[in-house]
Length: 208
Ligand code: TYD
Image (cartoon, rainbow, N blue to C red):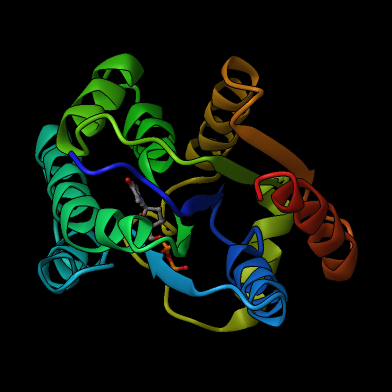
């Protein structure tokens, strides 16, 4: 495998935690610094992933938990192989909305699947690839819900889950961050967007 030369940053957090806003602000700052940035996301960051995203987010009716986990892992395998690794090999900054921590938090939070099995599945899919930095936007699900309600967008399958599910997702993300403090930056997502962006930029600067 060719050596990685770029920098890989992922953003994680519950639905409505402000990942998109922060990704946009960080992308602008990195571009201003003269860096080449690839913005991408999971699910749906590749051509095949686009099709998988439609199934996992919009399929009407149940998807068996293991099938759901495998669909996210399939999306991840193709995305890392065909989009992320090539960009890192070109020396670019990959700025990615969601990665394997989302699988552990969301698919593990259903309590049917074991979190470490979900993680192992994703690591197998991505041949062990882990980001240089993962920014966790931590937010009370009740606050996030109010934001989503006011955004007036239809809910996807996971957003439509009950409040208790989202509380478990939040706890799972915090547990993951605790386990890998060197990879994670946890920010309080109730803070003003500009303040959060400054904290992220300061940590990102250490990567170069
Ligand atoms: P996202 O793209 O953040 O949604 P939006 O377009 O509304 O901002 O994420 C889509 C959903 O997929 C989100 O509810 C979390 C879920 N998800 C998982 O359950 N497992 C995963 O591995 C990933 C990457 C996302």
